[in-house]
Length: 123
Image 1 (cartoon, one colour):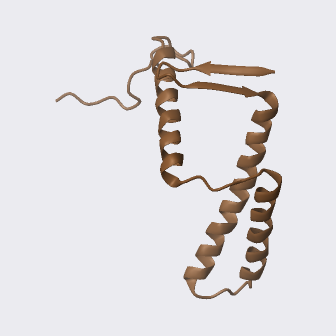
Image 2: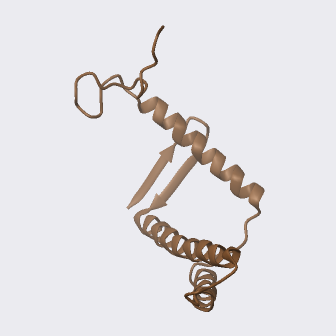
């Protein structure tokens, strides 16, 4: 199935259900790798490894990196290009959110509207 999204900022997104699944698979793999990397940093910066976790974390990180590189054709993208792309996506999402905001409450409860969550005191 083909999905498309147009934004008022000239961004056009087009994806298939299979690519969405691939994206979720990639996100799950990156999450596991990121978690292992953070644990590695934590143990390394602590200065001691009482559970002897570093060798296993090193193996896990090496295996996950190889999996991403080989299976998903992962490649380096310069940080400035990543940041620019993420900023465009965020702007498009915000523009869509503003466009779709209605006066009605999404919760269905009376008195709950699109206003601020915490009312400001007027003194």
